[in-house]
Image (cartoon, one colour):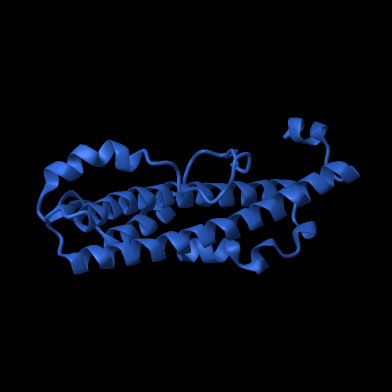
Length: 182
């Protein structure tokens, strides 16, 4: 997806964790969480654009003419509040431990989003041809699938790192006292 995402989701990234010190494990986990925040942010942007493009496609299927933005604009609050596309059920939301997204990853993903349908095109979605509208839906769905898969992979890396940190505390290899003295 991006070089940074590919690096941290590669199994070699979490190999030999037992040989790494706690500071390095924590730094790796923070790095993964930052990238996951970027993925989550861009995924929501994708979903918003999909909702708008899908709303326009539905408006046309219901008999609306292309080029008529007034109806679409009037329906935007309903389109954008029509529930979540989240693939996690209730109780499965991961609260982030680090809130700062990775700006380089975010920029790379936003460029891919703009290639699917730019903000300018989105602002003129009612003027897109039916073919361009259908192409945007396909491109956005493909990008959402790729970002969602990367998020799942990222969660796996975070879980692996967290399991190693937890194991060290359980076995006494690491202590809270050591953390407080750092």
